[in-house]
Image (tube, rainbow, N blue to C red; front, side, top):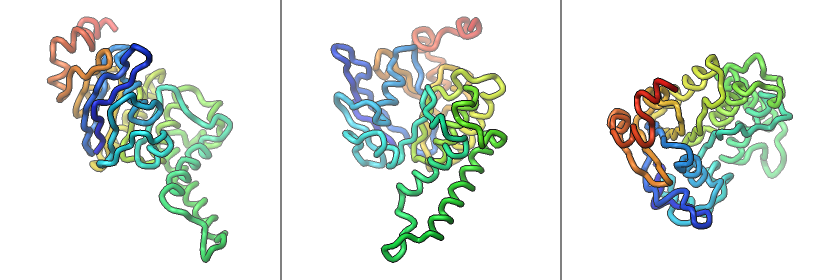
Length: 261
């Protein structure tokens, strides 16, 4: 279970996230919506550790993560996919994913040592297992035919799919997706959405989703929270939140505006 309590950050005199308190349970997907500048990505940055909170706490399974840097939060189970891709550009697709698998396994327990010395067979077997798992994940995101291509050479949509594969390789307790379909072609979007649907079937994982596309939000979310000027202004099931007149008019746009868009 992930929880934020009075989470706040100030930049000079501007309060970007203002005392947001929320609990996110395993087995649920919560969509975080609101207008541009509402504080959605900043809230993500506070949870994942990219930004230090001015006040308030982030807790995972009861453990206070406040003060911990992003790498340690990742190791404890906070997994983040960014709005802008974060890849190793000069490594192949397969090597990017293999490194994520290796980081996860080496973070859980030391391997390759036996009797105080290096067990070369164990090292080889571990590497073989990491590569096999990485190859399976690459196939899942439909990049199997590009496994040996450098990440920098991939089109934007394929880079987004690769980033999802990296997140799946880390197998976090909390999956955080920041506009995962942004900039993707019509053909690429269903691949990412199908992967998120599969993750939803895991009842021991929590998913947070920042997304502007309301059709995606309606389909995937179990719950919607709305931020505006850094404040939590609505929280509930999708039908109730979307139907709220104040939310439709002030934060999500009217039905006419959605149709025009």
